[in-house]
Image (cartoon, rainbow, N blue to C red; front, side):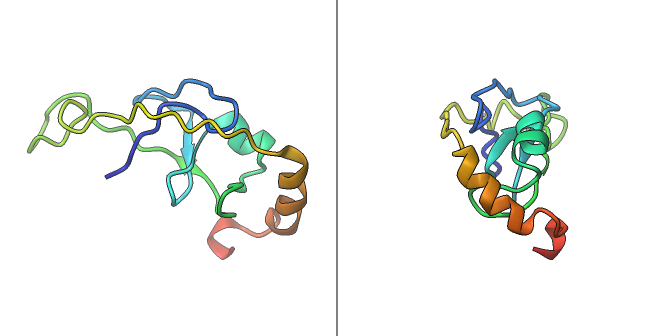
Length: 102
């Protein structure tokens, strides 16, 4: 089950469960759209993968108890500012490669 982490791991911006700004990699590393696109150049600093918009879990129980009320978003903050100099060196090697080809 997707964690739906509450904040951007880099800048700590609030990313509530219904945020359209949340971006995740395949390991659920969570960043705001600005950090993912501008600061990180669409390269996850933890795995090297790319980012996609995080899905929004339904707030209402439309079907089979698959909704935010039964499976709430995480409240555990994972604020780990990225070392930008180190990330720039890392990302320079792979950012020109499409995420699906990394």
